[in-house]
Image 1 (tube, rainbow, N blue to C red):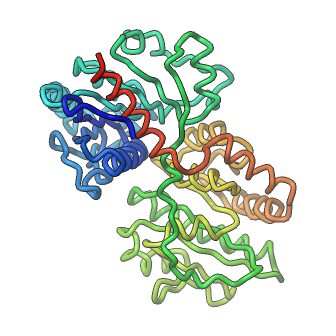
Image 2 (cartoon, rainbow, N blue to C red):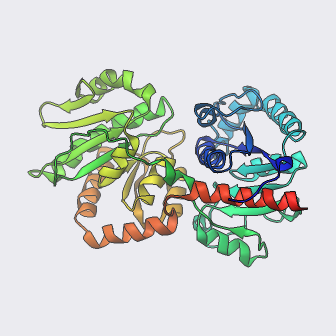
Image 3 (cartoon, rainbow, N blue to C red):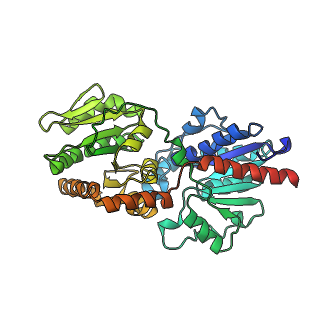
Amino acid sequence: MTEISPKYKRVLFISNGHGEDLNACEVLKALRQKYPDVDAIALPIVGEGNAYRRAGVKIATRTKALPSGGFAYMSLQKQIADFQSGLINLTWQQIQAARECAKTCDFVFATGDVVPALFAYLTGLPYAMFLVSSSGFYESRYIPRWMQALMMRSRRCRQILTRDAYSAELIKNIGYQNTSFVGYPIMDVLEPTGKDLALIANVPAIALLTGSRLPEAAENLVLQLRLCIAIAQEFAPNPVQFRAALVPSLMPKLPELAAQAGWQYTDGKMYHEDLKISVFCFSDAFADILQQCDLAIGMAGTAVEQMVGLGKPVIQIMGHGPQFSYRFANAQERLLGLSVQTIGKEPATPEILQEAAQCIQRTLSDRNYLERCKQNGMERVGAKGGSERLADAIAKILGDLSDN
């Protein structure tokens, strides 16, 4: 264990989004567990910071969920809505909180993109950047517009950490030698709970990933139920089974959503009486569903990355957004490579659903492709253990600071 002087024992964690909070919080928990002398405080810039709250981490200032949900870059309308909801005042309060934290903290761990990195720079403290929102896989070359900005030239930037090895190599090649890839924490939250999913052996199992934001997740589920019908018809007379990984807030809406889709609902199960197909719905078995299903219908962000990291294929279809638009899905396909197939460029029509069902049937019968997905998952997302390795990287920097 790295020895850390008590003089350098408080870390400010800054992150800007649901997935970014999740990653940063896993690193924070690993740091607290392995290095108990290190204290931490969090500054979530986007949303409520619920990942930190669940972990019992002190939050530096008030939080607020803006209309864009952190996706303001996707349209001018979202940007306008955020400004009307108090974005400027909220940002100013967050900057003040970051500067106030600098009086009691010794180091900053910034997770996300240029925004938390800029906040880290404004504290005046030494910092590390975990570029979880950026990857060289998004495009053929990796030189972000802000790469040459002062924050990465600053001597206070002690380390640049990436979400994949390829990105670290590209950044090193343009002169930033303090760059490395040590792991991606999202794979550390997939410990199965042992939940009985009532799966039938030797029958293809498909996960439904609707996303976490309402009302979009509810609309996505209705669309996925229509796809389930097309899939069942495509597989007939052979059976297929479905398991939905849902956020808790969606569960009370299931009777209404089932009726909307022409299905019935009882005791956590949606079923179509005429076609004899069922969808078992869970809000407490996310990891179990990803671990045990063979393929996912993905209309989500982080959950799709996790499925790919497990070496499994994902089929994406479009809803009406606002998060899961074609732009988002296309970027995710570039990021995650061959494991992800996007069907259609618009909200799914009956024809697109039929095409998706045919793609799923082909995919699950292509053994060579399924093997390639396993290798691709390791390359694009990586193995579990990233949280602890990132915690070790922070501890090493703290140790170096104490020696100076």
